[in-house]
Image 1 (tube, rainbow, N blue to C red):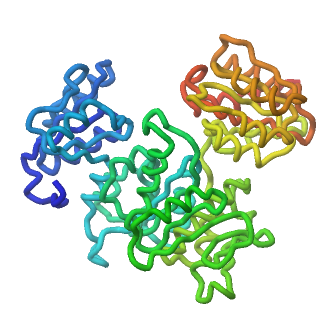
Image 2: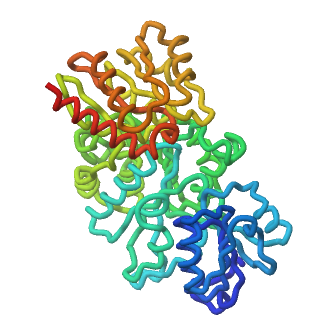
Image 3: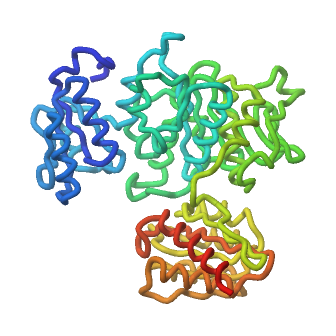
Length: 483
């Protein structure tokens, strides 16, 4: 399978099995069918939504097997998997016994890249992974590249499908690629131009099996890097991944952090974002990229994201003016440390996207004093380190969700003087959030921040983190309208 070309005749009639009937699976199936492959999609579900998607694909000449039929079809020569399928799946065990390669959607996209007319080479990938901050960093990077006059897009685990991007009728000059640990696990031949690991904290361990396996999959992003491996100076685990990577000759390790940078690093000096890596004499000079105030919002973890994006852009040759313009033009997605209102001198901030302890810690570090709204589905997380680190910033806490007791117990151990109020059990949706916001408002004083940074998943009370954040904003507006 390793010699398949983007539009070569070897695809014609090739029996390929696609695992998963979600967005990436459907995209892969359509692309493979267009290449001439004989495609079978398998999915263990059997709901009406899946049946409708199956019917659409079958009309395009794709075979679909649902439910108990989600096994490896005889004669399969290649499996292309959706990111969510765990590596211990029986389907992959069967593929391994049959000597059949398994690719992810990112691996397929990497193999299908086409050369640009101007260079004769495919568009380079500037890739980003990490436990938190991936989407924001990739979108910042795309904004910087756009400011530099490049045709680009934020793709991968965000925005445009990576398959659609590499096969776009009008080719991109360069791609800003967000990659999850799931995608990296199945991307053995990926070789980015430059890449960054923003941070590492326990997450998705049920899928990977261990923290070591999770970190190893994240580290795949550095393999074969051409110009720069960008790592977080505040997170030694990211530098360790750089040391373990097999990169191209001359590829450099570039650190980013919130302090004054040493040579070959990016950092902050007197409120300025500074590059001491991609300058003529990095031992004696530095380049000013912009100011902290150019970052929106200028929270510490978001400044770190901006530095990582700037490092990747500078590795590609982008000038300092475009970095500043791109950062100024960037607007974060909803539910990412977004101020949704100020009522009675109290700021209300929606960081519903903080669905794990690492993300919540970054959010909590940005404000003081805080009335913290936290809780939901813990996904096996422990909260002692989070609470211990934030204890001095907390005015009070309002707890919600199924696993609230874990946070309550951590607060009792590490912040016993912080008042804790638990929302009524059994309530969900708008009713629950309205009560939570009213309770938080009663605890807050002028100058405080009421911060929704739950450190947990949302599905016990809300459809997803987006609905949780939307209802928080709606409750704040209702509070503002109340006489």
